[in-house]
Image (tube, rainbow, N blue to C red; front, side, top):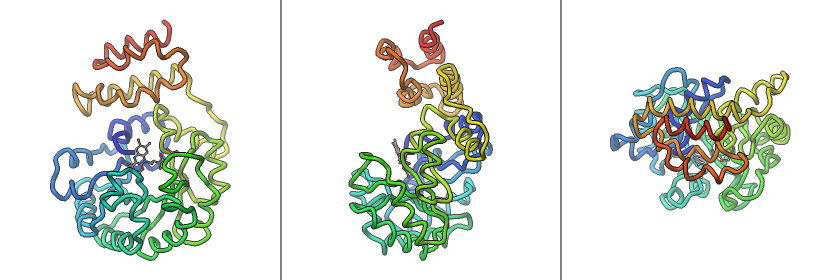
Length: 303
Ligand SMILES: Cc1cc2nc3c(=O)[nH]c(=O)nc-3n(C[C@H](O)[C@H](O)[C@H](O)COP(=O)(O)O)c2cc1C
């Protein structure tokens, strides 16, 4: 997830247990190929973050292939993923992200080019379609034929954006139509929704996005329940605050002084459902040191 799933977040997930594959935030192939320093720095990861897949986006098969080759050579992730589902204007107006669903020939060319440039597995993340949820069936066949090793489907169309509910049943059409693994995504927030999404879609796996924000324990919890073991339950407020504190330390270690300012975008997720949070909002938006964060956590926990 762009701007969220960076090295500190991935390390936090590992600290919280669970050995799920982590998909890193998407990076622009063009920026990597041009040697953009900030984008190259975003590739860095610690070995503890594995298994880890780096996602790329772009519309030019040549740049995508060069970027994927460069990523494999420099940081050696466990896989490369191509974004063909992002609905934001910046992506679709540049003919990448979700707009590739309307250009299956170009999408296939990208998959072939990237596949030819790397030795690690290649997956593609897409949606149910641009406007109709049936479009993904033909599109997935094209991606499979071009050489994709797996497909992840956010079970909404581009036109839906994030509205409505994810249609996990629609993913079943793809599971029936292709042989490579399909992972279902959208609105999976706990073991119950994970089980329902898997049984409704018949998918071989699942992807959790927003459900992990402010809740880095979710992967371990879902994996535990899917193995048939006892549900450890929702994290308590104390757990969430200790997760936030750990996240803050990792941010500072990775980004330096600026780390806590960059962490503020995660606050709404950590502070979700805290009664009367309005009272602390002004204090929260000013947090820039660990001392200030500790003071905020102290008042929230009511000590
Ligand atoms: C802030 C934000 C950033 C996202 N960035 C990416 C991204 O970089 N690549 C991607 O494939 N999907 C991205 N997504 C989409 C999610 O991966 C996921 O498909 C979507 O949120 C639905 O799943 P969820 O209900 O589990 O969050 C992003 C979503 C959000 C809310």
